[in-house]
Image 1: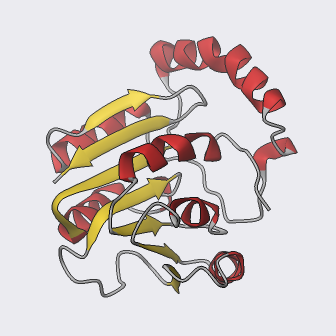
Image 2 (image 1 turned 180 degrees about the horizontal axis):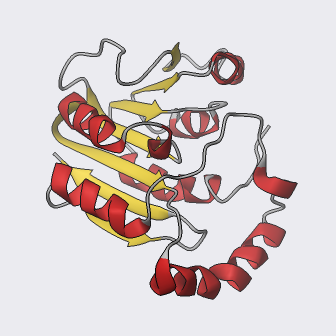
Length: 196
């Protein structure tokens, strides 16, 4: 089953950035939809999710996809070798863990020339954030209607409220990974990108 949410709206952006990469890791892979979409265009796609139900659903979705695998486990504790991946993706999952530790771990797992992509949720705070969100209300609602977004966006995987504001997350990202590019997306998300 495919579906559209404010998170999956960024799957095309992710696909454009990682297309042709040989080893891709999707952190917090949920039900595996992104892995399924990446598998025809990448060498090997691996998902990891700490939630047993999500990992099970991802395995079911990817049954028969030879270049895809799913690990049930904690990203910060799973034993991956340094330089294992050409791309590490956090598609609305970074705020589920300690961001600084997760970014450092992702950096260490990237091969030279590898790419880190993050679709991030942040907590609005202050006039600038509220104005940015207000400007997005009508286009986001139109996008939701045009794409048939499931009411509430609930796809049956764990969710968590973001702890950091956009400014706080930006500070963490550029401190931990100097040179990280950081911008607001249309659907109340922040997009971050870094190359090793």
